[in-house]
Image (cartoon, rainbow, N blue to C red; front, side, top):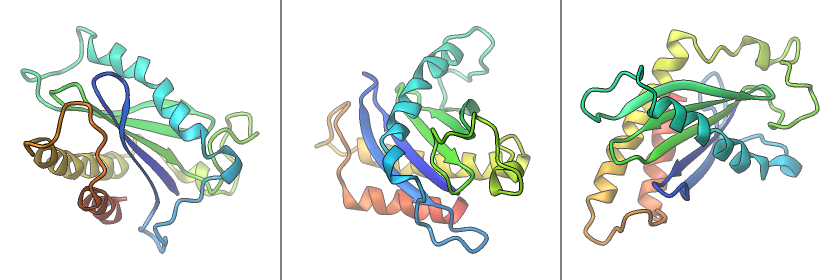
Length: 175
């Protein structure tokens, strides 16, 4: 399974991006996105921002005074799934999950392949949701520590190798 994680700022600009593979069930932690279609990951994630804002501003969204929100699975694109975590500062954490070894945008007509990993992946399964939520919470903890740095400015790209290392550690731990 391959993952693409992005942090999107308040002006819908990418602040951080990281690709990784699963470390569970014998995975090696390396993303297996198709090289010709790898650039679609950013497009797919950004296209889900409209859905995030729709959910964010709907009157039925459960919020507790502007607390961080795990929005769960919000969108699907040709067998890939997008999950979202929204911070109180309107920064969005988006995780694109490609269950099969193929990249998103593959000519599969949007259907999961039979006999592959794509048919067994369920983004709404309690174990999957819990793993993604825990990943987001660990990254949120590191994010808060990063933005508390007096040298960090709002909507500035995060280039810290320590931040990248901690995101990779959370990914390895939960995904």
